[in-house]
Image 1 (cartoon, rainbow over the protein chains, first blue to last red):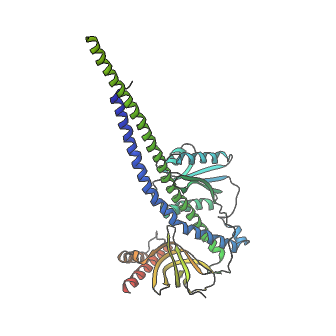
Image 2: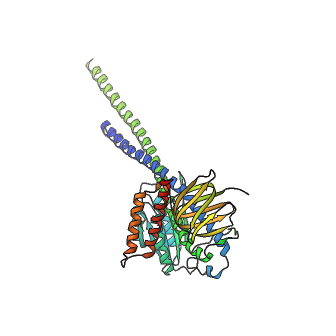
Length: 284
Length: 138
């Protein structure tokens, strides 16, 4: 049976851990709020971009020069680029492991295709560095800037236009709510033109084909930026929930240990009393 | 006939402006476009320069925008700029320094100079300086 002092020491150590998890939870909550604001404030741009692209797509549908646009052209998928957006830091529950699992599944589903990976975040890079063909990485994004997304998109577009890759997919966690993240796998290239745009009788300042070919790269940049922002918000949300669970687990452990400690103390008191009583009885 | 339309200016980071306005002057790639309520639908590339709009109460305001798209639709104008700044965010001294630097670079080009980029930088700086000066002058 452990001594009282041992149990007290354990309780103290669990309490220390609990303090840390509690602090991390608070920090994540604060960071989450900021990240969430950025996601929300970036939404109008993306929504407007989407609408503009669908309107433009509707006005140019059927033109030969559009179908042959390099960013729209469908090729047989031999070389596939996968962008995996993970976090730099762990302790976020299943945030990164789910991403890595999804990436594995993605690779397993495509035998015979050469898959190149572009990892964002240290966790994904560290895991896949030795297991897959990682063509590029991006780490140290605490608050993703648009320039980061632009650089990433530029790299991908260039490789796609050179024919080094035939399609591009992105796997990332999307922020749904504080308690849930949604893992999404979506196709970035070739661009799927959105359907259902309306076609007001536009005056075109530039020919629609020209506009479209300028808009497509920006559309992709916007998508990347959104993915980075969503992933950051989701990461903080995941860490917050994980740390909340850890804190309440620690409370539970402390309660159990305290109960045990009291029992041990009671036992030792009882033992002492018995000793005294029986000692006194022996004297009589 | 309505007398105002909605003007929305968004950058990748945020929605900068969502306002009912009487008129707007927007820097398109090929020159400024004036928009009044009831303008026909238009789609074009956004240039670099000063976007001026007149609010419903008659006050005019400026923004400096850089590159992107503009869409005029039924009762709304949407501007998607890759960058946009409100005039009060502009630091006049810095903008002037940037303008001098950019002009200097164009006057004495070396081999490594990306002319298109330098020209854009100059244009952007000039628009900033102009907007900031008008703000402080008025």
